[in-house]
Length: 224
Image 1: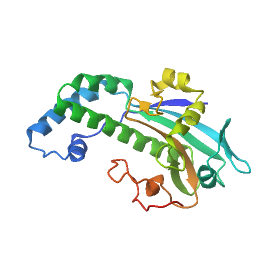
Image 2: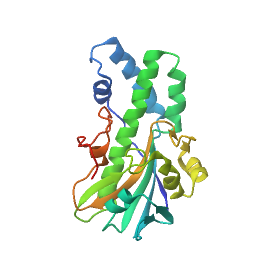
Image 3: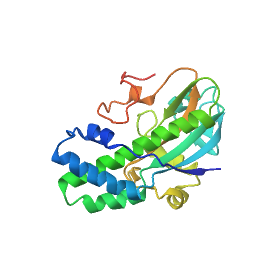
Image 4: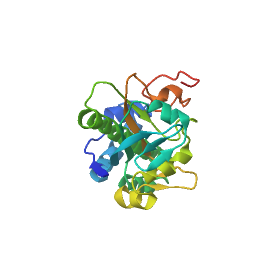
């Protein structure tokens, strides 16, 4: 059964300025501080999470009632009996707030960075909770994210949303929707599957987006 997690963590001004590459005593930093204070008043980042069983088939893997046909996903889940599926978002509150800032290029840029910072802090809090409450056995917490790798393309967002009852249910629960391109809205949202691995692994190792602020491992190229 899925659960909604409401996150109370907030990005710090120091972290935001580092993300934006702003000097602390600059005019831009003053604007960033003002906008971060505004955002903190309304931000409601959240995660929809579901712990579901894993069943290995001859050539596919079934997560709950959803069959995944991509060999790489099956390969990575060998030896795993359950996964934590999630959809995290900065929240519709920040999304609507940021749209009001879009008319000013600088404020729009900063507001977008604030949304990303909230998503990052939300995902870090989620990771710690999963390590503490879901996977208590020894091993490495690893993740697979549809769209991050060609081995599990972004079109698989459809299947991931089915693990929560479908797109309509996800929208009702946390306000996240899927576009025809399978991109999520609010745009600062993420989804994936956490599992316990015998070896240390991050799918960042295979993702060529070298400038991604959420990168957790160096790019190694190729495929495993």
